[in-house]
Length: 539
Image 1: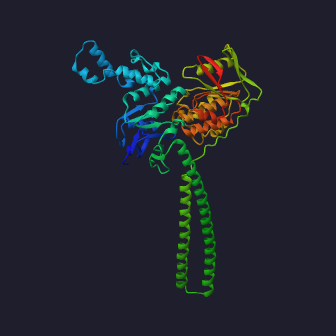
Image 2: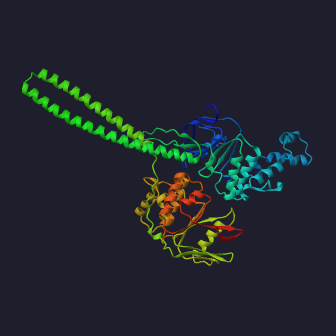
Image 3: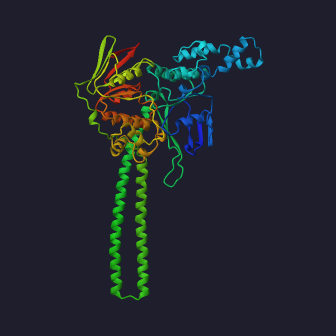
């Protein structure tokens, strides 16, 4: 493409164990603002690492026209300092050496024109919402919160202004203010952006959506399938409208193709019936005419050729119609349907399930109410959840009274990667028989061989469903669910599964999430807010 920023040519990456993360990916991404989406495990983060040069392709090529900067999603796990993340550590070391009297010309080469780099770095940090002094540039990243690490990464982009900035799940772990900083960066960015995210608000401002799917799986014949990418022009809302229209057309095409196949089947059967009658009549005519064996044989051979031709014609038409059905159905995406029954989680409308004293007032939840818990990073939202769980287990917790059985879905889900899905759930709920567990897992779209797979082979969204199954099958059943940032790292289908599961849940909910659309979808009608350690009802 003439205006392509990124060009991929048969790009393949295979892990040392032989697993294909990407296979034969070919395509291009134009300049401007691009949102990259795809199912968990489709290879988005692997593609980012290939674009930045962190990984080298097993085969194929990557062409990028311009400088690249990246905001990775795992900065919180980094052993680097703030200066190293900003890419200025060597310049700061050279400046320090010069200040101590070391006049080595190599130091001046490293510094170049960046004598004021420390001040500019602090300005970039402040612009990203992380005001740090020059003396804090050597601070280890692990001492920052999840939101602060993202802000440091944003500051690096502010500082260097690459022609292409790659943002890998930039709003994960960010509070509302942090998300505003990210959106501000996007609005003010003059170069090109590649945003890997399932944050629907963030994707509202992109020029196009690129969907990545196909992860190098093998077909029934054992052939490796190519990874593919498709571009949809417009914002995420435009993508959803286009996809909906396309799916409606594909479903209609499938209906038409099935009808055509049915007609071809009937025509073949009718032709076969007519042919059988004709052959019986012909045999009887030959017998009545008492033809010589040679003449009778010639006539039978001609009839057989005619029948074979007619049968072949109908078989070919039926095969073509069947292929049309296959192609039409292949264009239809499977809808996510959640089918679980949770009668034991029901809470009557007038029953109080939780009371919390704070700031001289008492906040309570009655019946199956759904409450969003808001507040900046570090305000104490997770602490409140821990207090609720402590109070529920009959341990003294001043100011918190839990009247219903709670269940907590934490932000970090820790499961043994070696155990199968079925074993994992049964360890948490040993009283439930395997058939019931399998039925519940199937209702959460963990079907076929998924229950027997090791947890380590599951996507992030699938692991969340396993943890959810553990909670919902507990005895006693949880009638108050506490969900801490449940949509972090989830693809769009997994969010849809979670919304479906929570729609079936009949108890009360408290949800920490900065995804406004998700909160609307699960029916949150109230908001509690933590400000300066005080919990209050937001209006």
